[in-house]
Image (cartoon, rainbow, N blue to C red; front, side, top):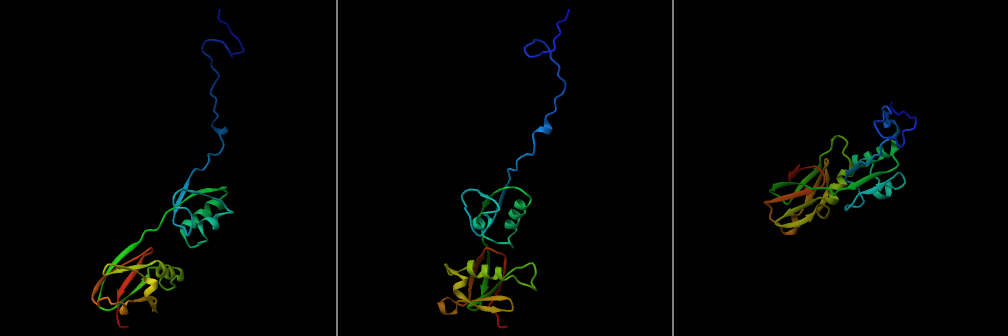
Length: 181
């Protein structure tokens, strides 16, 4: 005769207790994402924990930066904090054969009818050009703007007038040789 019991604690044999579905009891899964992008400031060696109170101090206020906007969107959705890894910006370079002692440069903007002053400033401050092996800053040779173009003049610095120049900047740009407009 089989032995039956209501208490299954230490009883040997096959015990059937039905299907126990506990998947609804685990709660929401924690977000373990990481946002990688270029920001005005912040650590480059390891991720930072960013929340609403420290976003401006840690990353620098930059509402036109899509990476910064992404962090704001995540924090605005109710997430208490997000891990952010800042990466350094790479430079884009172009070569130009000149006949004169200067060249024109301008940032490539999505809307050429309303150029962004921030892009012009960034191009002037962070742009560099190499001539005859010398690396020079655009800001040091800036000679003004004309029709949306920045004019860079190196006439009085002893460089030959026919030469190849390599221009590098952290944003997309267009180049023109010196021309008489």
